[in-house]
Length: 182
Image 1 (cartoon, one colour):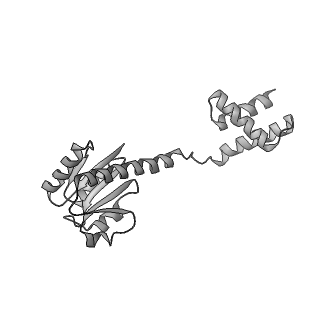
Image 2 (tube, rainbow, N blue to C red; image 1 turned 45 degrees about the horizontal axis):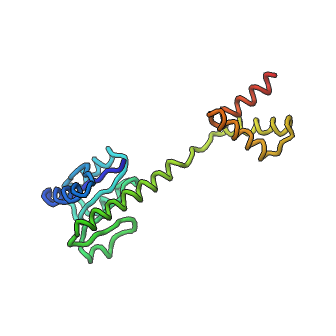
Image 3 (tube, one colour; image 1 turned 30 degrees about the horizontal axis):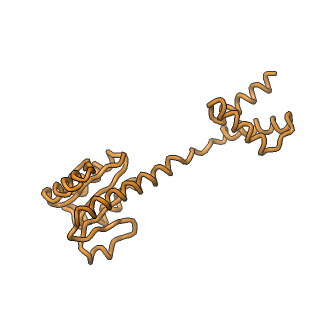
């Protein structure tokens, strides 16, 4: 679940942004006045969008952006002149900010972040050498005993794995146990 953090030097302005987003169904998790307090909150949350101005009480937005983890995006509220100098990866809205543009941009950023992080989670973890060795040994045994090609042996292990609801390493181990126990 992605969070929204508003970081502006003036508390009243930050609360106005929070209220604008709240009226459009976007819940703000935190309102901060300093970059340090916002970074503290960022590290307590899973992912999200930080809305900030170019100048915070304790640092410049470029400094803040360097400390921001890659699972958070930055939306900069700034003047047109400063928006031209934004570093790559920072999205900017220029003053005066219309409420609809603000909410739409935040929604777009959250959706994009969820898609990006979802893809990252979908990548299966790399197998260890030992796990890969079980699969390779099971393939070799199937190729020798059942006269299969390497691809057929791999697909056989894969299909058995899906049919039994176990992962491929466990299936390979079961195949090796069955063959060597008989």
